[in-house]
Length: 203
Image (cartoon, rainbow, N blue to C red; front, side):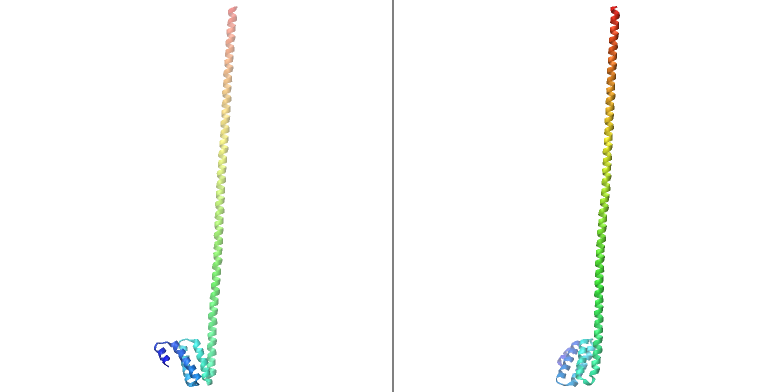
């Protein structure tokens, strides 16, 4: 009784339900069913007020033992509440199962999106590298072609220069030959004239 007063003074309603239930059990054990029923009913009332369903079921079960006359009523109330709690628990469990399933599905979709994003990033990088390689190759070929063209141009210019040198050399040789020929003709002419004058003088 002192425990009831202490718990009541501090507002421990859940503790009051437990204490009333335990006192009811005590009076049932000593076969004082009247007091046992009173405390069991108090435990039931407080359990309802505090939404302590487990203690409420225990109180109904105890009341069925204490009050055999109304045992079927308590039993039906017990079964109804128990079924309701089972349904509620199943609903909550199903809800959590659905949430877990949806969470797993969401995680799986995120992982799939991550893999797809990584794949697209990989493809983009590969295409970028390929494009860069193609551009570098084209630029290198263009430079090589330009270099070959410049080399060919330089070779052609060198050949033209060599031809010009050869032509100038031939022209110079022709001039030298012409000079030599004229010089020889002049020399021969002078000799001929001198010889003629000499003959004329001798005669």
